[in-house]
Image (cartoon, helix red, strand yellow):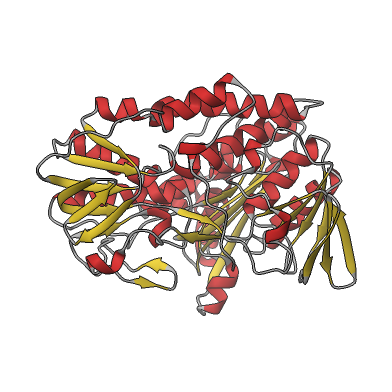
Length: 491
């Protein structure tokens, strides 16, 4: 891993459009004067991404004195350079027959601006949160400094998020690679783009940018793209990318990036691919560098802030939430963490992460979502399980829409209906995984969720199909004989 370029919204200029300047003013307003600190806060939150925003506004809503510190932009990566712009881009390319680069990027920037209002400095000030723009660092376990201000606090929550990793490939830093932090600021599209990493971010951007006419080469070290996904789902996403003329390079180790004039060549074994720009999507690392954690007695373990199941660090007065302390770097995971740290920072520390059910979704077309254990994980843990599967193409709604791709696969305990994990491949898999998440969070098995009446015709009917399949397994040969005997004597 090599040092990444530092990006700070406070000194960026946006030459393109008014909505960029409006967005910037919402999330990191120019000429903003930090407030005079209160004598002591109940809670100081470092980082105004999803975890920090929810923590701050919830705590203030309960009446706590709250300070929120942000050094890059309110909303964090999710709003500014992550979920919001990427999903806006994906949706635009999905619903537009011949999308242009300019129109697509104008759309995503306008969407980002409209959502930024919800995360703006003014909104949080209006809810009683003292917002400090700048870099926060610990002076001691109960004092955080931002600029010239020292904030005294009973509890602190670290929610500083994560940043993209740049792999240590010779020639990569000289190529000035794009990451999610810079891709959405492009004014002119490259003709040819190499994407390093075929996880969720790499696959989503490969598909969207290919729809804009950019020649995409997608590189992945593993045997397949989306290596953590269900094999059949991964294979279907691969086919959808190939259909968009994305060139897939799997099982490849990039040895160097060569440069000549304005072009560069990605060298992976015997394969040499010439491109105009490189986009790195090779994982993320927690943002801890500038926090002076040692002054607060907060330790790092395996690159993450070490926390217990109550999200308390090695200093019990300091908690952490979201990407900075978790391998699951999703906005909804940060949201779940925020709700836990509000309870544990302000009141009796009774909330835990022990039973959290955190799904994952890749928003390609089709989408693939999953929750719980995979078959590989269950096999590794020597847990016996049953598989229940519904082909979405068999549902009436899918047939009326002419969209027969996709499946739902649910894993249960052997001989029972307790849901251990699930995978969905569908154009709206992110929406369709919700009933399974609710069932798992509330310990509802297939039998129980099958009692719900599901609107017809919808793809949500897969829930009934799964339950019906399970219920049929409960009719043992002995029970079947009794049923037949009953009907014979009552006919």
